Each structure stands twice: as structure tokens, then as C-alpha cells.
Length: 76
Image (cartoon, rainbow, N blue to C red):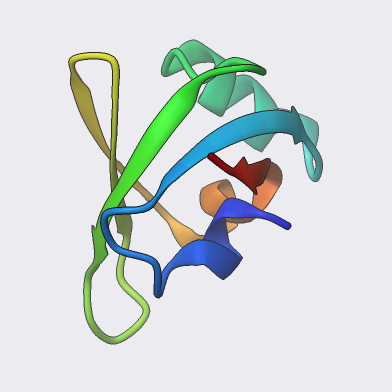
């Protein structure tokens, strides 16, 4: 399941298991610090198709739909 599919699970923790999609988006996620094995918490989603707000380690990120769809995750 990808991270974008988890948007209705506010407060849920997930673990990144891999990345899929375009190379440029995977590279961007990697540069932001998201790695396989990272535990992230979904904080919420902006209305009208807006970004997904997540927290990992001590960072907060807002990911666009395309970026969130690249991160493959499992429930933690």
C-alpha cells in the first residue's frame, strides 16, 4: 500500500518498505530524509486534494499526492 492511500488514517504510524514511481520523485523523498525502515506518523491531509502532513524523527513534512504515492508503507 502506498502512503497516499493512508490519508484517512490520521495519527496512524507506518513504516516505509520501499519506493516506486518516477526516479525524480523517489530521489526527492530520499533527499528529504525518508528511507526504507523509517517510521512516520500521518498527521492529516489538507482539503481539496492538498498535501499530506507527516512527522518522522523530529521533522514535519507536507507531501504532494504524487510524492506520497511513491512511498510504499505497512501499518506499524
